Image (cartoon, rainbow, N blue to C red; front, side, top):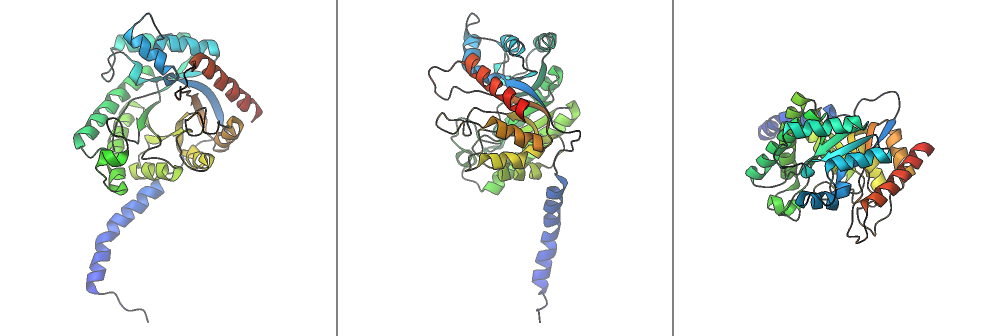
Length: 321
């Protein structure tokens, strides 16, 4: 016969029940993004591909390239859209002047380009509440910038930033569950602001706190907000089979970063674009799939060449799938 629970055990269970129910409800409430009519994919380029040239232009306007030039390149190459990283706007991290934003927006429009997204740096893994609050304030500012640009998404990091080397250092070796709670609270506040302005907060895996699809999904379930979803970085699931992680997260994606290699290093396997496109199509995803090339410490890195190669490979994969 099973013994009856003691009064102490009963009270302990009763006290824990609401929390357990809330956690289960949150997990059940967060579900794949509703889609219909089959997959429909459009090309975009993340401006970060021109990192070195954009930084050179910021120091000397006679050198490198600016965001207007990136838009020109995208139009000539035949991209459908451009993803304009916030770091390269004048005055970042402050919001650019409206005159600049609207001039850039009109420039992209005249070229037939959509603006598929933007993004900023933030650290929600830090133990210091002031660091997390700074990131929330920055994301809120740039949510409003994204709305003015007509960008549907803004990238948010789920990982640590300089001066920290990793999330353990940033959090003072706090338990993972505690850090995930930091992230969820901050992202939920940002998502609520995004809802006001019609901008989705897209949480990017970046190979630190989020290394796997399961970790990515766990965080999103904890945030549990309709205006917070996944940005799938194909080069930052650091697992034996990143394609399996990508398949897990594709149904939750609102934006992408398609990288040249599977771990964003020169010596890691090159991305199998037909395989990747097949996974994305099977998820029913409809939207932009931005590519992002990186120097990966290559001295001969030329974004004009590398982006061209990636775009040609992506177009071939799209045509064959």
